[in-house]
Length: 238
Image (cartoon, rainbow, N blue to C red; front, top):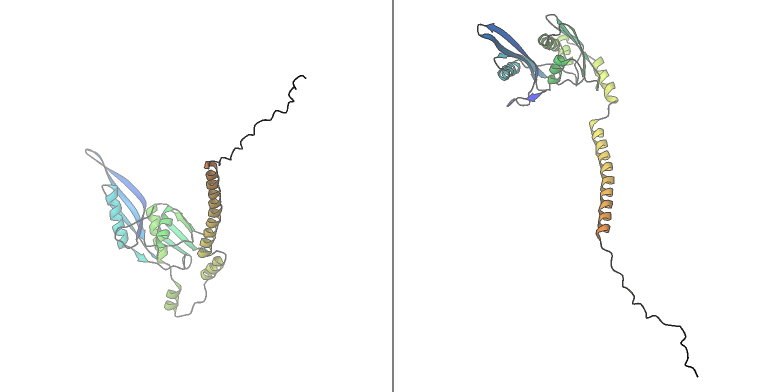
């Protein structure tokens, strides 16, 4: 998981792996640790570092310092890379392929750490040969170092480059993707629609509870009139 470095100005760090080695000595085995860390600002700059120590936290700190010293800028084309490229290191080969918006980073853990710290959001990758995380990270950085932006090609060759295939792919992909503002407005409207019935139901419940707690007013009781005896009385005998 990525974490911000203290006093680094927005530079994030992610630990690719922690490795343990053991040396057999007279008194037993002595352990030491090493860590591989990738740091970047998610804005076109990334670097990797490898540090060793007798404990894990110092090894990670050393690797972070080395990675910050090794940071450098690489060309990007929006959220992807300008063109397809392949990097090599030892017996490992990593191929990076540009992708249309919305694809995401399709990669393993080691390659993904480098590309995400660089700031890429859409990229296809494929690794060949050795799957050692150290070699994979170095092969990925080698591939990124082979990238050339459109401006660099125009300056080196002295020609005017037209619209590239990657730019056309980005335009086509963007036309099918709703903008962020539209999505936010839709979410706000849906939230408002959900809140309104909830408020109405709550008001109804309050009214019902208030009506239940009120004591009905006592209606005046009409005084009953005295009963009249209509039974004829016997007249006295004449």
